[in-house]
Every structure is written in structure tokens, then in C-alpha cells.
Image 1 (cartoon, rainbow, N blue to C red):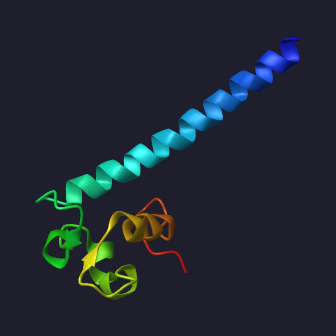
Image 2 (cartoon, rainbow, N blue to C red):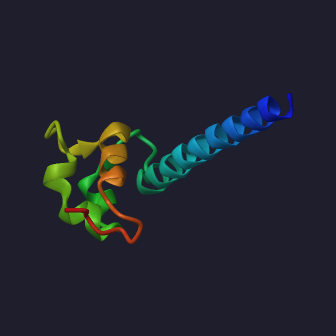
Length: 86
């Protein structure tokens, strides 16, 4: 019985960690989206050198702005120091 409870606690902690990571990504997106229109413009991206320099590859649908899905993909493709992973 104790083993089952421990497994449940571990599972709950794992889920909490995943949702915390998503929140951090959302916070980063919201900070860059200065006008809160739901997109990051090229002008707004200037404060993040890696994002700005990689604009063409991050803006996957070439609509001239980065939505939250494109930003999430960008975050997953960069390492913790903010450098693009090869």
C-alpha cells in the first residue's frame, strides 16, 4: 500500500514540474509580446538576440510574427544558455 501511495506522489510531482515548465515558457512569451496581441513581432524580438537572429527559421509559417506555438518550438530548440542547439 505504501508503494502505491509513493508512486502517486511521484506522478503528481512529475506533472507539477511539467506544468511549471509550461508556465515559464508562457511567461517568457508574454514578456516579449509587449503589446499583448498574442504574437511577437520582429520589433518586439529585438530584446532576445537568439530569437531575433533566428527570426526566419522561428517564423515557421512566414506570416511576419511569432505565435505561441512557434515560440514554444524555438524554446525547445535552444539550450539553457539561450544558444541554438545544432
